[in-house]
Image (cartoon, rainbow, N blue to C red; front, side, top):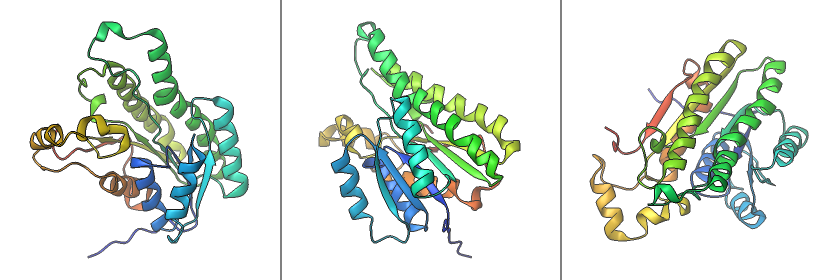
Amino acid sequence: MSVSISLAGRTALVTGGGRGIGRGIAAALAAAGASVVIASRKRDVLDATAAALAHLPGRVVPMVCHVGKKEDLERVVASTESEVGPIDILVNNSATNIGQNDDILALTDEMLVKMVEVNVLAAFRLVNLVAPRMIARGAPGSIINIASISGLKPQPGGMLYSFTKAGLIMMTRSWARELGPKGIRVNAICPGLIQTDFSEYYWKDPERAKELAGDQPLHHLGQPEEVASAALYLASDQASFVTGHVMVVDGGATA
């Protein structure tokens, strides 16, 4: 039996939707018929992605937004609702990793504040903006937070990244518990090493990439589309009984 997923008539907001995992998720949602707003800081990247995805059934709308700024988040939510439609699916994907440092004692207050601002506070603010609107409409909503396997185990040289992703995972579970009775499902995806610009430090050197992939039961680097498939499922009615779940997509690296 084959099951096709349709998101026709639904609106999604994907932060960091211009490239990498966010672009992959935007493509998957638009291919299923959703109208998708992709939000990030760089207009040229957003426009290029929207143009590349223009052939898909769902509309892809670029909106410039710095997720670290509360006023930008407020504006992008308001613009999405006025120009595209009420948000049914929220994907918190934007992230930074400025605190990557082999010397854990060299990390600074400023690094911590920035990491929390982008990796945690942005998701917190967006859920607070979007969830009340979902509840008021009485329509089922899906919130998907892109965490990381680094939130499940410490990333070497990446304490701040691991800390913020672990926080996002716990927030996901808490939101799921509190918002489930109000019709909103909240889940997280924990990717392993996915071949994107964000993670190129780990795969750009062929020998390093081969070594990392060789440690996994599935000996290839993950692709954005493989994370996107998980997000598409979690966004859809096929996952209507799934909330508070942390879906690991890592080629078996944590097995």
